[in-house]
Image (tube, rainbow, N blue to C red; front, side, top):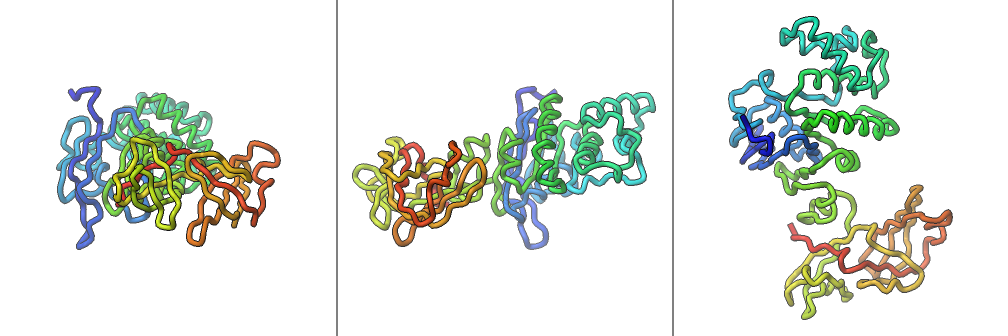
Length: 361
């Protein structure tokens, strides 16, 4: 029996090509038991292919894939302790909700009494009580999503794979379904691996993010850490917005920008004299004020654009001839950022600890 503290899924040096196109390159990944991992990346980064390799729908060219300590090489999809919720839900239109949920159990040869018990359990778990007799076309999008989820969970997979599970839902439904999905996962202590293009969805649902770029996992870790301390320029700019500053270290370890100003860094992050450096600061770390901010690094600029978004406003502030800073202003008061105006001159500052040094890769 596998150690309960060991990763449920362990992938090492996994690679996959289609013809002359290499889609995955030396993927290493360990998924802790009972966690939600989101695979996040641009189209073509290899997310769905990795999901298909875990499910057994594709075979790798190289590398190993172990689930609960068992090598999945030569194990067909139907024999793996894995189930998958597809983006389209793939419900059978001629079967009722209960019939859809029971389909996999029936294929396994589960007896009628046990099927009934498990279907009732799945209906209650996914808040579908009273809907067992309906056909899929009589359900809302959120209800169909829950039926697809119940059909997988009733088989008690070790790993549930979700391929863009919210993509077919209206945006207004997504937050509710996300909360339901996370509640089910926490209640079961199950292991979910999620593919999504939606960064907000990935951050809201996952315990760990695996950011993918051109067939590789370029950073893996808790969402807060990946967002606050991106591993390189790609992660910094892909995951949210990042103000980037390039320059060289001076004798005090500060970053001297090409256009002259300096960015003050924390002592532990300071650069060697003459060393090239790339520093990033998130928009919400910037303070915008008509008066000097008194912060470690400060610029003066002109508000070029001001976009109201309810709880916050997004400002684009031109600093000098070639630099535009993005700042997020929380609308704490009814006036909020409306008190500022396009064309107004302002001070923009940030603390040294807000600046993160990035490998230029």
